[in-house]
Image (tube, rainbow, N blue to C red; front, side, top):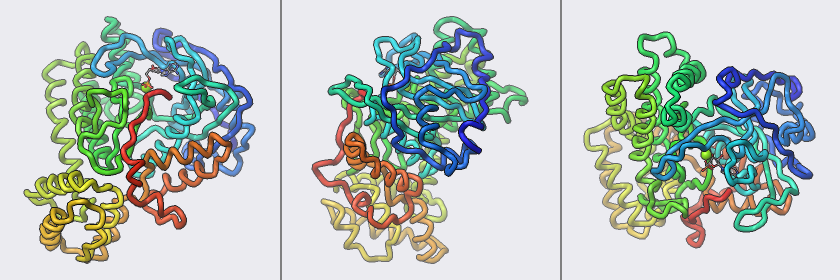
Length: 478
Ligand code: AMP
Ligand code: MG
């Protein structure tokens, strides 16, 4: 199927006009294609080889509206850094509607009713980051929005410096946020709140829609998905950076990538966002913030769900989170069956990774081939004596496994990625792309799609991050 054969529906526009604002995109000057993602194309039923650059550019630049699509921005609110903001909304994203179960959105396509003081634009730097990282998360098996393509332009956009305007076509099974519910609750529009709950049930939880207490079941499921999502972030050292409730997906996927980072050397209190002065969204705060955000959602849903039921669901959060994290960490270490003292084995490892300033991605990758030889692992840490003691405990623990060493290696190599797109790697691709060389964006897309593969020629991106480039802080401006 070709791009021009896509047909859309716009179920969101069946809601009252208070939920959205229909608004056309403002095309960029001299747009050109940076990259197109064949995996996302296939998800839409498109054959990647039929896609033409000119058609894609027209679609992204708002010059070609597919059959059935309409341009609209969605309204929402949210708690930003702990403070309630009564009206946010898609300030620089314009939706097209839904096709093949995916809601498509043009990010950076100009001002909307919800832009406040913003220019409605996104710069090439942040668009490349979002484009690549959403595919990298998908490659790691972490629920996320996806991205079909990206265009750059000659449109000057003012940030800390002048940058090029860009647009990403991103797609998600749902763009409803915790903040979408907060908007209707805090403005006392409880009839609309219920309509939104019904919409979300239909969109993301159809299997629960005809049960006994569909709203209760849906909230319970959001709690579970959120807890498990954050456990997945923790297991790969991912710091989202801006976990405001408007950036929390009601479908339990990762959305709204801004100053995110995959950590370099392991630092439990790592904060990637340099505007986050108090470290509200630090790596080790993420699980607690996930719960805090769910409490805000629970409050917003209180007209629809009895308090006791909301609290009961929230109480399961910790259990879901811990169970998932323990499972992931056992897999990272190649342990077959759970044991009571596993949490202590994991805690002590992360303590040592931190004190030894170890880059966790290469560490777990090298550990995936552990056969008793310790030198390569010990070379990664500033505190080899501590790691030696831990490896004694690990070797003893491995004796509980019944499979062979080769089986453990195979499993661990499928669990511990060789490549995560750390900020210094993305930065290299961005600098080249700003000079109109998009080859590294393309190569990183390949690494993102298959982070467990070997990818000869790209080994330097699998090594510990050079010291001068570790754990950079990023600005929120994008
Ligand atoms: P974020 O922290 O990027 O998720 O954005 C928070 C809110 O600000 C959302 O409502 C965005 O749509 C809006 N926003 C961010 N940047 C811009 C911009 N350049 N122009 C208009 N709205 C923006
Ligand atoms: Mg956002």
